[in-house]
Amino acid sequence: MSRVIHFEIHAEDVPRAVEFYRAVFGWEFQDWGEFAGMPYFGAITGADDQPGINGAVMQRQGPNPAPGATVAGAVLTMGTGDFDATAAKILEAGGTVALPKHALTGMAWQGYFLDTEGNVFGVHQPDPDAR
Image 1 (cartoon, rainbow, N blue to C red):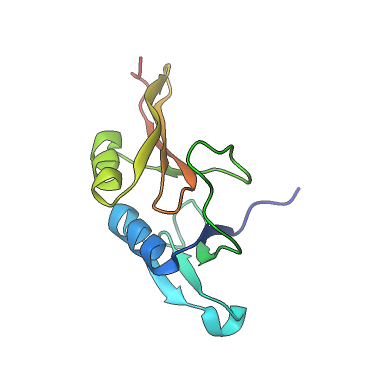
Image 2 (tube, rainbow, N blue to C red):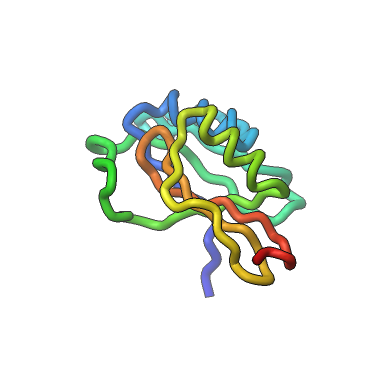
């Protein structure tokens, strides 16, 4: 088996996308554009001793997807301890709701959003009492 070890979020406006993920999730970024030959910012999403992976925000090779377009690619889901607080940060930073918060009965709260570049991502709050 091969595990997922890196992700790339494509953005028409890379600085705007970097700021969105920094404001919402507190990610740190490093400019790796010199290595990639295009706008490419490495994303550090947490401590190395915690579950999860790091990735990047990179230049999209075309326009952002149109509103309502189907997903073309993988959907990242970020964990949180407080779904509602995270949702508020997303909206404040310019994101929008794609699929509202709903219970994964007995497991978690889940919802989906669009970032400033039209990319879909999920938010997941573990909660065995979710109904």
